[in-house]
Each structure stands twice: as structure tokens, then as C-alpha cells.
Length: 378
Ligand code: G3I
Image (tube, rainbow, N blue to C red; front, top):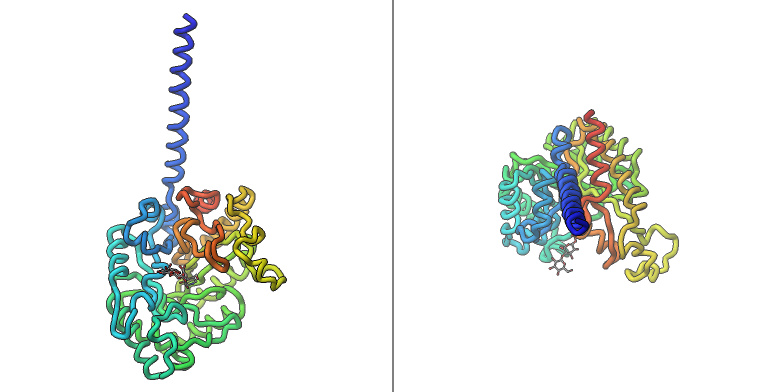
């Protein structure tokens, strides 16, 4: 009798735990099945930066998340000049063509990044002295690359990071050799070479008043020249505990009065200290191995994850408040493991700036962002 009862009890426990596991899995999957692109489908595009592995579908875990959560992608590196034009007359469209095919297959809008930028320039032109040669490179690069992807990509970051923190033009090879009007010229060439793609100006810290004023002057100059510009991208590389909410709100308001889209194009909220945070110039303090600069190598404390989640929720609340002006929010990477912030500004650190962890599982920030959408839609 006892034996029969304990067998039943045993069977019941197995059944119960199976039920619990099953429920948990269903709950997790169902909750996890909730997707960013779904909950924000009537508000703005939700994108992610993707790398070569992901474009070539060699990263299945990323692939699942990209298809499930996002409806827009930005190539993290493969459409930059040093990769897409390795030689004077040599263009390498292989990876970017794969990106376009991958995006088409998965109904993802491509924001091509970028045509003109002072960084990651091809080695043959990085130190060019002759202005005519720089102009020839400038014209050929835009005409050839933008024409090749006309209508195949949804949009272009035509010019990236042309401003200094005080709003003046950065002293790049383009400013030095082509003069103040090079940004207007870049958009004029892009508009002609790519009439079927949207054209954007993209930069970091342009939510900050001085740099914002510089960006507004630049956008007005392009428009005054009768040249098309469709939007401005605020990159959004912030620290979770220092998100400039007031400046961001002010910048959405000011940029949208120019009749252009406002986007957050490279969003990530770092949880690590930066060398410039502490007054000391003691470089050893910034050594990768220094625990103070790499405090979460063994995991992110839940308290920090919760504060980051709140910061993300506050941001999305603001984006929803201005959803008539905000057309896209793109995260700079699919998950924490992919982030450039593990190697910058100090190599070999462990950062947690995004919504999905290194196991591609949603973090508290994911649920807070989803909840934000749900609270607003009520
Ligand atoms: O591809 C080479 C590889 O062959 C080599 O073995 C390896 C060793 O160093 O380097 C690889 O190139 C790296 C490239 O990323 C691809 O992974 C470069 O060193 C590295 O500098 C480059 O970093 C990129 C960075 O832009 C370059 O400025 C980051 O991945 C990318 O996230 C970052 O993105 C920029 C945006 O384009 C513009 N806004 C700021 C943002 C963050 O810096």
C-alpha cells in the first residue's frame, strides 16, 4: 500500500515538476516571444547594428533574435569606406549585397552606414594631400556606392560625425581639402545617385546644446541649398546613470521643427566607468586589468541591471511621447557580447549595454521597454 502510495506520489511530483517547467518555459517563451518590433509597430522602426557573422547567418542565436525582435538593420562596419572601397577603382560589394539579400528575405529595412566619415577611410586616401584627388575620391565613392544600392537600402547615413563638440565643423580631410560646403555637396551627390533612399545626417552628442546648434545650422544649410535631407540621427551612446533626458527632449523638439525625421541610431547604455570620469590622469588606473575600470567581469549586479532598465524605460517613454517625430530607434548591437563597448575605450572589459545578455536572453531592460509600450498603448 505504502509502496503504491509512494509510487503515486513520485509520479505526481514528476508530473508537477514537468508542468512547472513547461509553464515556466511557455511563460518565458511567450513573454520572450513578445517582440520589440511588434509592440512599437505603430510608433517607430526598431533596429539593430549587425556584423559580418550575423549577415552571413553564421550566428544562429543572433539570427533568431534579429528576425524576432527587429524590423531594421544597420551594418556595423561592412559598408564603411575602408571595407567597401579598398582600392582607388576597387569596390567590394559582396558583404553589403549579402546584407541586402538577408534584409529582403527577413523583411528588414536597411539603413546603410555610411558614405562620408573621417574614420575607417581606405588606406589609399587617408593621407591624401592633393585636393583634386580627394574630390575625385569623394565624388566617385558617393556616386558608385549610393547608385549601386539605390532603392535596395531604405536609407543612408550620408555624412557621419562632421561636427566638433562646440558645433563647428570637424577638421577632417574633407573639410581641409574640399572646404565648408562638403557636407552640402555630399547630400547633393547622394540625392542624385540614390533618389529612392532616404538621406540622413548622423552624429553623437548632438543632443548637447552647442553641438545641436551646429547640427541645426548644417541641416538648414543643406535645405537652403535646395538639397534633400530626410532626417537626423542622434547616436545615443550614453551611460545608464547619465542619460541627458532634458537635452534629448529639447533636441527632438528642435530637430523636428526642421521638418525632418529624428532617429536614435546607435543606442546603448554603458554600465562601466570611463577613464574621463575620474579626475586622475593615472593611465594605469585605466588598465583593462584594473578591477575599478572593469567591475562586472563576473556578472552584472541586479541592482545595476534594474537601474539600467529604468533608464531604458524612461528613454522609450520619451520616444513614445514624440512618436510623431521619432521614426526609428536602433540599438548598436544585438546583445551585450557583440557590443563595441567591451573593447572601447579600454580593451578587454565586460560591458552590458544592451537589452539581451550574452546568452541572448532578455534582460530586465527588455521587459521594462516592452512594458513602457504597453502602458502607453492603454
Ligand atoms: O576587421 C578587422 C579584423 O580583420 C582584425 O583582425 C581586427 C583586429 O583589430 O580588427 C577588425 O576591425 C575592427 C572593426 O571594428 C571590425 O570588427 C576595427 O579594429 C575596429 O576599430 C572596428 O570598430 C568599429 C568602430 O566603429 C570603428 O570606428 C566598431 O565595431 C563599431 O561598432 C564602431 O561603430 C561606430 C559607428 O560606426 C559610428 N558611431 C560610433 C560607433 C562606435 O565607435
